[in-house]
Every structure is written in structure tokens, then in C-alpha cells.
Amino acid sequence: MKIVQQICRVLISQGNSPRPLYNALQSRVRYYSSHDANDREFSSRAAVNPYEPVRVPVIPTISPDHVNRILQCNEVSHQFTPGTSAVSSYCSNQLASNNPIEDRRAEGVCTLTDGLLFGVFDGHSGPECAQVVSERLFNYIAAEILPYDTLLSIREKVEDQELNLVKWLGDYHHATSPNTSVHHRSLVNYLNDNVNMDMAAEHYVPDLLTTAFERLDKDLTTEALTHSESSVFNDYSLRSVFSGACVNVAFIQGNDLFIANSGDCRAVMGIQMDSNQWSPIVLSNDHNAYNSHELNRVRTAHPNEGTTVVRQERLLGELIPLRAFGDARFKWKGDLQKEIFRQWEKHGIPLPRNFYSPPYLTATPELSHYDLTGKTGFVILATDGLWDCLDPDKAVSLVGAHWEAMGQVGPYSPAPNSSLREICTALAQRRYSLRPLDTNVATHLIRYALCGLGHEFDYDKLAASLSLPANVVRHYRDDITVSVVFFSSRD
Image (cartoon, rainbow, N blue to C red):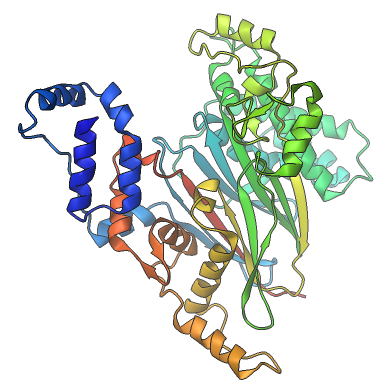
């Protein structure tokens, strides 16, 4: 413990570390002293001879070019053909904290309709659930929104893998899940179930999105409980369903924007007002214990567990989000879990405490709708790693200023009847807006979240944050995933 305290003091005295780094390292004192044999050895020696030199692991100072390579290596962007949709372009980026990163992202075009899909997926307890949901949810949505006659005519082509329901836009490097044949069979079963239902008159988009979310979460369970050829249970499917993922998806069709959110990712819109100022509109609610409506929903569903169902702002004292895909520990009955763990030797996970009346968790999304007609602006989709560092007002102002600085909006023109004070204020804000170091606005947001200070970037703070050791960084910040979707004014 003394050794880590000395390390913290040395880092601060050298001026190479900001105060938050000191706090993060101090919080890990107990970890190092109890887990690292070398630290225990040096602590014992220091207690005997406090003057004996101590080896201090120095966090390296990295160059600006190295910083930029780290921040920009996962950038993705795409420009849409003008006039083909309400969306003009999008930018996306990720910065890992966990190793491997547990966040995922996806963007796609529905091949049989004019729908566009953008999503961020915040995994927890491993990346498997976020991976499979990011690969599959868009297909379920694309299938669900199809007109009945179209669905009837294409289901055999989908079954024979002659037709894809989604054209993927992102070029990502995560290994795909190994159960592609199982996933395809579930999608075909979903199409057949829809054909066998009388769907001809059903086309209320919020209901369709809800159905797609709920059916995929149900299929994750079905697949996990299906015996594979080599084992009693499907190992990867079990790992997928016992990890979890919060999901926020934007579905844009024509001038209609729909947000479907399950968990604590967030969607925030920035709209340019007549005064040329950017106004934030929060399009989703965080599903956690700080949301009073969500907390009441959970307690109402478990009326006899008021003191135990949410403890210390966590579901059953463990899980922060109150909605999520996967997380079977909070959904399946206790007897089923015990039977699985008895046969599935790789994971002997105990039941949560005070586990009386499952399911405690749902993947059912909360929906919102916004009409984009005649609007110019953007939507920020991000995992909570970004929102831990930036509030919606600041995020929207950063994206708006970046867009202007990159020449996307045009010269300033005061609104009619603007006072001289209002004009001066607007010009001053433009004058002192951040000069972007990144062409990708998602990177710009991540950079500012790590080291923004007023209208400047604190390079030392940024370099120190990106240099944190792998076993420390997760206690300093979370994985960050950001996608920014720009829409053009279209009547």
C-alpha cells in the first residue's frame, strides 16, 4: 500500500499526471497490495528499510502523433447521396477501456425499404451479448417493418441466403460470433412466424421496433437452452445470454426519426434554431435507479420486494441498468439456472441475493419519435462512457461548433430583429469555439470528454489518460462509443 502511495506522489510531483489520475491510482492501492506479489515484497522491504530505493513504474509520456493514432484508429464515416434520405452523413468512433472492449456499434441500410439504422451497444460482463445483438438486431427490425406482401415474397430467398435484409455500412474488425448458422435459423423462424400471423394492417413503427427487440431477446434464451452437437448446452450462446448489453437504436424512415432505447445509452438531438444557436433535445431516458419512473416500474412489478429489488442504486444490489438484453441471471428462474450451472462446468455463477420473483429485467425498449421535416441538425448516439464526462448541452454545442468550423453550416447570418447584444454574443461564441483537431466529430467528442477545459484541450491530461495501464484504466473511465448522424433540411 505504501509503495503505490509513493508512486502516486512521484507522478504528481513530476507534473506528468492530472489530479484525476492521482485519485484513480489511489483507489487502486488496495488492489495492488493484495494482488501483486512484487508490490507485497517491496512493501515488506520498505517497512524494514524505508530508505531502500523503490522501483517506480513510470507512465510514459506519449507524443501528439501517438495520441492522435490512438484516438483516430477506430474512426468510421459515410456520406449519403444528397436527396436520397433525410440523412446526409454520419461519423463514428470508439475508445476502449476494457480489454477486450465490450462496446459495439452498427450502421446499416434496409435493402427492401428506405429505412436507415444506427446503433450503439454497451456490453457488460463480457462483450458476447453486445456482439451478437449488434450483428442481429438490425435484421430483426428490417424484417419486422416489411409490408406483409413483401415479406411473403422474399422469405424463401432469405432462408436460402440469396438476399440480405440489411446492407452494413461500418467496416469493423471485431470477430463475428461463431453461431451464424444458429442465428440465421432463428431469423428464418421469425420470418415464418410473421408470415403465419395476420399482419396486413399492422404498421405502427414503435410497436414493430418493440416486437423486434423482444423477439431477439427471446431467441437469445431459446438458443442458449438448445443442445449443441458437442455439449449439453450451446456454450457461446450461454456466454452471450449471461453477459448483457444496453442498446440504443435510431431508425430513420423518410423524415421520421424513431429512437428505441433499452438501458443507459443515450440519444441526444441538436437542432439549429433561428438564432443559429444549437439547442439540445434528449430523445431517450436512462433506465437506471436515478430515473424515478423506471424505479417505480420495477418496484411495482415486484410489490413485495420494495426494500430488496433495488439496493444501492442497483438491481438486486448488482446491476446498474434496469433494462438490457441478455443478463439471464436476472430473468431466468432460479431452478433453471442451478440446473444449467450443474451441467455447464465453465461458469458456476451464484444467483443474485433476494432472488424471489424473476424476471427482474426486460429488453423492452422505450420509444420516442421526432419529425425531421425542415430541420437541420444531428443526433448523438453514445454509450454511458461519453455521458459520464459530458452533459447533453456541452455535447451538442461541441458538435454544432465543429460542424460550423468544418464549413458544413455556412456563414453567420443574424436572425431578423436580433439586438446588437445578441449578434455580439453569437459572434463571440463563434470566435471562441474550439478549433477542431479532428475531421471526425465523434473523435472530437471523445477528445474533449477526456481532456476538454473550456475552449482548450489539456494535452498533458489527454496523454496521461491514454497512457494508463490496462489494469488501471477501467477504474478511471469506461469504454466510449459515439455515433453522430447528420440530417439535412428536407421538406
